[in-house]
Image (cartoon, rainbow, N blue to C red):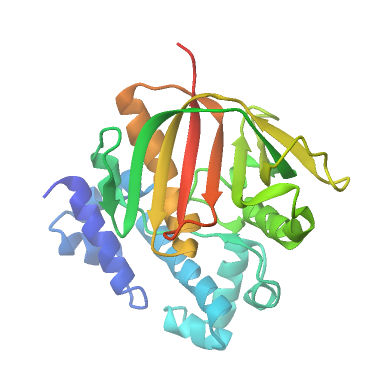
Length: 303
C-alpha cells in the first residue's frame, strides 16, 4: 500500500463513521502506522491536522442537514457527535461567521471542506483521454478558442476566504454572485445566449489579496449593459487548455467536481506537462447538455 492509499483509506473511514468518536490513534491503527507518522502524513496530504479535518467535515454535513431537513439543531448536533449544542453553535459560527439559526433562515451559498480525492494527485492523463473517478469524468485537451464577449456582473473577492479551492469555509462569494445573475437573467432574454453561462476568475486584475470574479452569459451581438451594475467582459482568443468536467448532478458538478478539477489541473497536470497559463480562468456552463458539464478553460502563455 502506498502512503497516499493509507490516508485515502482513513478518509473513507472518517466518512463512514463521522458521528462516532474518532481520533488519530484509532485511524493510525486501521492502516498499521504509528500515530506520529500517521499524523504527519495526514497533514501533508490533506493540509489539515486530523481532528480539525474531522470537525470541519462534520460541520459541512451539518450545513447540508440544516438546508435539506427540518431536524432540530440540537438533534443535528447530537447526530454528528457534538454532545453540547452550545459548543456546536460556537464552532459553527467560528467556521462560517454565522449561527446555525441564521444559516437556516437565509441559506447563503457556502464554502465547505470536502473529502479530498487523493487518487487524482498520483495519476496523470494524456490529452483527450478521459479519467473517471468517483462518478466524475475529467478530460483535458488543447483548443484554439475565438474571442467572445460576455455580459454580466463583476465583484471583487477576498482571496483568503475562497482559495485554495475546497479548503476554505464561509460564505461562497462567487456562488452568491451566481445567485444574483440567475435572479436577473430573465431581463437579458434576446440580448445574451442564456444556454451558455460563464464564471471568470481574474487573479491579476486587482491585488495580491483580492481577485475579480465575473458571472454572465455570451452576448448575441455587441450589447451594452442593460443596467448600471452590469459590465461587459471580453475573453481573448488563443490557445487554451480545456478541461471538460462531467458529473451525475449539477450540484455535484459545481462543487465537488469543479474543486477536484481545479486541484488536479494546477497541482498535477500542468506541472507535469510543464505548461504555463495566464492568471485568469474561464468556467463555461452549457445548459442544454444532457449530462451536467463544465468546460474549465485556461489560456496558455506564449513561451
